[in-house]
Length: 76
Image (tube, one colour):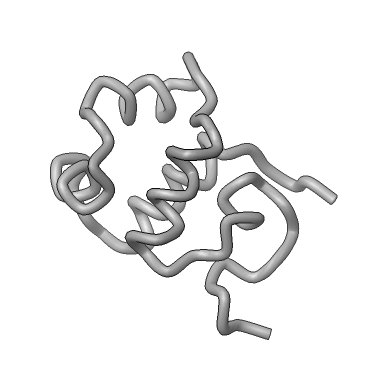
């Protein structure tokens, strides 16, 4: 069941990692404008963008999509 949306999860990730938007973009390959659109809720990330984020930070892609699952792949 979804408990959030991708935009909220990306904002949570930025806060938890305590990294700047520039660092986030450098690590994921996303543009600053795309990240800004996601954070402002203007757009939802496409699946390929979510995959890039999940891979860059070793996240559970379902968590990024807003599902009520552990954030990391190795969490129970």
